Length: 340
Image: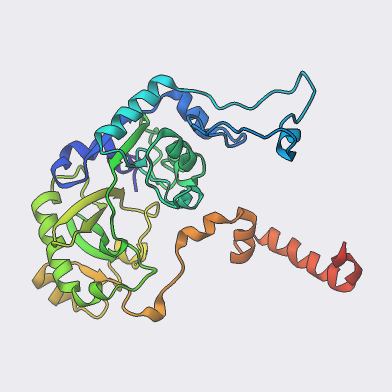
């Protein structure tokens, strides 16, 4: 995967080419001071939040606790304000119907949905967007390491970061699919929400595959800037296909029910389908979750836990695991320590 391929998947690059087959969106330049605020590791204070004033009754415990310190040098942590940017965001949200799905050049804060009051990526104000963005590892990666998995040594392309606001649509997870294209040929389609079983996908897989293939040939093939890429689509209740996003053809993109070895080498890609049959029909390999037995928890659940806990449970950090086992052993030899 080359840096140029990643750059071609920026929203502002592909959106003008495919505007008619995707969700209406507004692109706003991200000011440098907003980028700095998003990367600030300090206390999470959300700019633009309009909390109602707190009124305490006389004699109540709350009234006694309002004054936390008599120290004149005590400073109050206050979020920075971005009045011009805020006005542009509010205008864009209004033009899109009052609710939006936010993202940056590449990623949306899908790993941070749990922190929102509505447990959703649906945003109605800039404060909603900032809360999600400042809580998201995906957004931080966009801002700091967009070319981390690239194999070429060429200089990083110059980037202008953008806030992308997409008109909010209630998309059913069971109607989203990820499509893999190699040398301008659609080679694989995967159920997007692969952790769940959807009966309609299993029963309509041929029809779904055919409609996506037709959409690809009519609207996508030879029109994107690269010949190897990944794109996501949504199939609505009428069977119409909508383009959702483009992603680089490489490990930075989740391969879902495929492996990247299968996709890049072609080995074991066909599975039960014979190569001759696939070639004659010119159909991609379609994969979905075929049984409720294989249902898994959402991959985003791990982002709710501190990283140390996740590393321990998966064994990804050997040193933390060794320290933990040593602590368990010491506690077993000295039971009185466990009560401390």
